[in-house]
Structure formats: structure tokens, C-alpha cells
Length: 174
Image 1 (cartoon, rainbow, N blue to C red):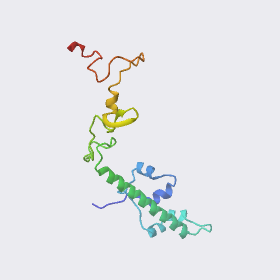
Image 2: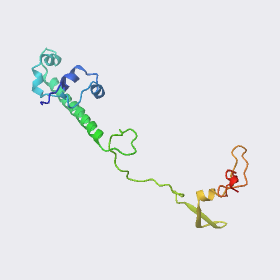
Image 3: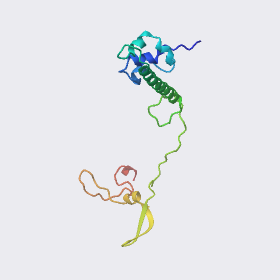
Image 4: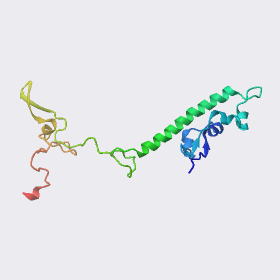
């Protein structure tokens, strides 16, 4: 089966100067169905000759070459973007990517998160009035020894989180 280019990039940008790549992609143009011929093949077309006339009505070769060079650059950018889209669509996704398809294969995670009781590994101990000593507890562990405050009344209760269930939840077990 022969690969036939249905759309011509030169004609597309010549007659749609106000459109951009997004508009062309929405219209269905891509690297598979859009092509660009060589520089000489467009010079014989009457509509192209009419577009690039100078003040005297002659074909302006310099203006045509500038436009064609611009068309080549934009075509290469358009095709490269299309190839990158195709490549990225088929690439292995991160397992944390919420926007990827479920059918897309995902890579194994590079790290595993584990819950630990003291994640900052900070601890502090006091051995005298103005000195710090060997660490005995982390900040979190030290906070567990403080009295619980009733958030509704603002009063301090007579138990700590480390105490055996003073909240009354497990009183039926006593």
C-alpha cells in the first residue's frame, strides 16, 4: 500500500495564516497525512505565483523563498511534535501519574514509603537546668505525655494520650 499524503503543509499555512498547531491538530492534520513538497514544485502553481507578486506584478523569488523556508521550519516543528506525542503516548508511565491511561504500562516505583513512629528522627533530653543531655524521647513521644485539652471548653483534662484509655471508650472492659 502506498503512503499518500492527503494534506499539503504549504497550502495549509498559506491559506490559514491565523491558525496555529493546535488548530491543525484539531482539524486532523498529523505527520501521517500531511506532507511538504520540494521548493520548485510550488513555483508552477498559478495561485502561488499570484500570492508572491511584487509591486510590478512579477513573481518575487525572495519573498517566496522566505515563506517556503518558514514553511519548512514550521512543518519540521509540527511533525516533531506529532512524533513526540506518539512516542510519549507509548512510553511507560509513572505509577503515580493520575492522568495516564489504565492500559498504559507503568514502571515499578523507585521508592517505597513506609510509616515510622519518629520520621524526623529528632529527639531531645534534659540532664540539667541549662543543658541538654542524651536523647530520651522524640518530640512526638514527648507530646504524648502532655495532658489532653478539651477543645470545646478549653480546659485541661486529667489524662494523657499515653494513659490507658481515659476517654471512656473501653470502660466496658474493666
